[in-house]
Image (cartoon, rainbow, N blue to C red; front, side, top):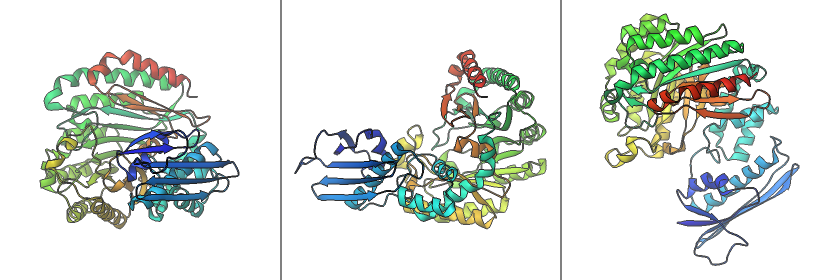
Length: 496
């Protein structure tokens, strides 16, 4: 199917494509010059936006063989003060309602929010003096977000503010992410740059040696510029899939070169419970790790087999008990709603297990079918829940988190998520993960070390952001290390 577009000046097809695809998935779009043709067999979507800082007026009309479906809207002065962004937002909103009427579809609760970080909009509104009620009203009216989601992200942003606001005037503080690209096996749904140890074990030793060099070089530069590291996060992959001595060496280097007096959090993704031997747990605890993730994803044995996990439900219990005995202050557990073959009862059972294990953090992911995953190629063998079923599962997790005394503290979204839903981190009050907040809200520089790690360089003067990534392939990462270190040194010199 094709749709022709008539758009206002300075609004591109790319700026509205994702909203159109909410209603007409994958439709081919092209710009049309001149007025909308009459009696065209190819649908035409026409948008006009007029006005300036004092307010805008716009309308959209979708011309199809079934008729013409229109929506118009007037706005007052921009709540963000950014007229160009307001024009684009209004165009997206007009398209949303015109296509909603034309198709009769309900594309989910997020309205025209199709990006990864909806809370960033909330923070901008709060920055400009909006209170909670005003923020919720703007989200519902100007972004077509449903009230429940507007309340959710506004509450999350308000919880984050005490951690974020001091850093706006503190360019001397950063966080560090260290990426370990190896896992015992590759999960069915995984799209991360992770390499199975069964096939790539020969890469581990040279990778570790080079990562140690990057940690040392960047740490020395941080010290040179008197920069404090607020949080350190070992992710991947599965860092605890490394040999115990390799893990110990990396943790020791992180403490020696990266940890500062201002470091308040040190996280290690244990991920796979079957990698959490007592020796590795003691190594992590001895290195001062304050937050450990043990991620079952599901507590249903049949599901674990389907998704490619080599652990059992009993392994999860053993890992949690051992971690508690070793003495980690904060345990996180990840679960996924929408896994193949699961229903609401399965999620209820999983959350009952999780509640009994009493972690301080629970992160709930909604299944996203990614291009780089095996799941996309094997969908015919793995029927997935509907969007409505996924929403019911998500609601189960929300109630269990609330029943355990947890509050939502960070949220992000991904493309191709079931039910157009979201991922939410819950925590007991005061046990929120600082790194997760800084990484999602992008108000603090995060330096990424290791294969596939991304760095977010935030300009403390204007909040602008530059993303840079290390190569995903460990061999490419090893080969290019001198270049990668120089690039980070140059950025660190400009951060103050």
